[in-house]
Image (cartoon, rainbow, N blue to C red; front, side, top):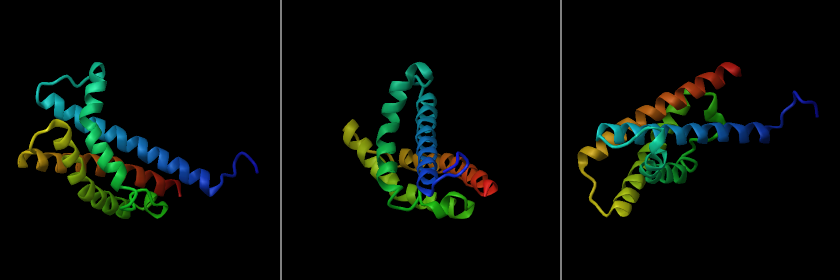
Length: 140
């Protein structure tokens, strides 16, 4: 096999790795924005705290998104399908993340927090994953 020939399994693995990395970064961005908006440390020096804030949502996302088809090969290069699968996956992962956060913090989840979390993560994921799908579609 030449260096220019890539197996479908290798390409699929790279796609999933890129999407998972981008998704993790998107959830870290969400957590950093949230922490900063509440006057909490959110810079690189607070990466551990930002990661702890993002963790329940990341666990929810990575548990649900594959089952909802957010990493399927036919979605990667199809922007409309990517956005639909991303929205479905977040709709299903969102309550899981909220529930985990409530368990970890031993607190109730205010409706306002739940709604802001839903909208903010959805927007960040749609921008990131939509851009990925557009680039993948261009590459063919």
